View 1 (cartoon, rainbow, N blue to C red):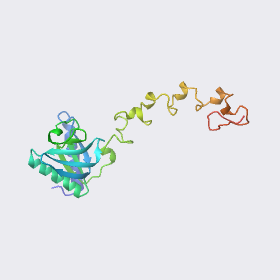
View 2: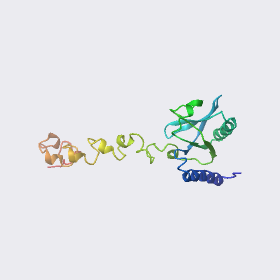
View 3: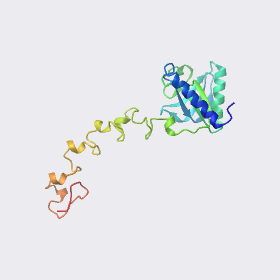
View 4: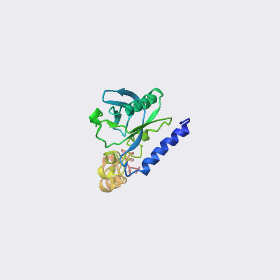
Length: 206
């Protein structure tokens, strides 16, 4: 029997280790934490709704009632997590498309292979690694070309003034040396004793 947090942590770690060891046979399977906020039972399924979508996609996880004993055990773990304000670790395959057969929709639900009640309180990146500031953010979808913090953004947006190579390809007044290149530009105060726009790089008192 698991009697303390250390034992529970060891169990989760052991299961993660087993998955890593059997990577060939379980290449698509993954454990993800879920904070249960809804437990439901239907004629064809038992499901849990998570507080935050796992991987930014899956709010629901479900198990078919074709195996009533498995469904009952799974519901017991889900309810214990919800009532005890705890997280559960859900084992699932993101590419498993069998869910619609028992009411688990492809858009936001995946079949449950295992559920573990835990005392651990995971960080946001453990639940959804594609959130901003998480390691998987830039690799997710088009983030690497739509967010300035990601590699590849400047290659996709060469006209962005904050990209390092912008001034090497643009003769822009925001670039250093603009007043030296354009001494007659009124923004550089050619007719004044100081620049009309002193915030521009290269604008200094005459």
